[in-house]
Figure 1 (cartoon, one colour):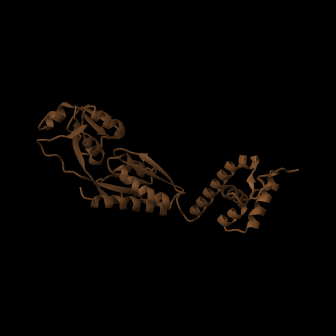
Figure 2: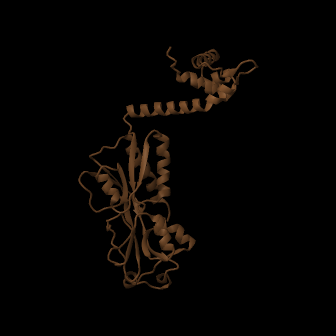
Figure 3: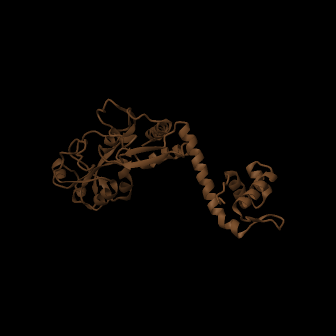
Length: 305
């Protein structure tokens, strides 16, 4: 005899609602069904499983030990079914299954990025987001190679013909060093002073970058993320150009300081762009993500300095 049986989601839903609410009548109200329907679904579930899930000897049904043992598994199954149903509806509507975003932290305040991701999640909870750290020009490279759908980067002078982009704001840089560094004690810093000390730079492996800071020192350490970068800087192991949104907490804490120079630096700020490739068309979720990020960055630009 075949011992396999089919359990309908409605049976599991009725069982979970009754267990949660404490009665068949309350479960019926919460699910918008007749009490007799709920009672029938649970009875059929007990028949199909061969288990007594509720003790009906009292005024209200109570979970048996067998019912309690199954409750968490039932809830897990219902959650999985809900996710499956939502994702299948999304895919049939043309939504992307996942979106990959390559992010250059120099180009965007991550706190502001989160403000754009939160409403996106509320609208597209079935779409998986892959958020990649990509310093220097590597974000644009990932988009060009199809490894990322969207890039958040410092503006470049020229993009390939198959790129689309949207300017979404600007990013200011400041020349800083740790307060422990000897150069931080000087009233005025010359280009020769910078040349004589270690320069810390954010850059992907093998990428010399495009910012006009390359010729200021021949003593350079390259790092791929700001986590170790800022630790080295605050420890007094060099000077650097740092995005203001990253430098600000350290400036406020007094662990780094802006260096006064006796020469003209290349004007800042740099623009921030969102980029994507025309060869890999964005679906509705990708377009919405660009709109959400653009919106929060535009609002940030309007805030007083």
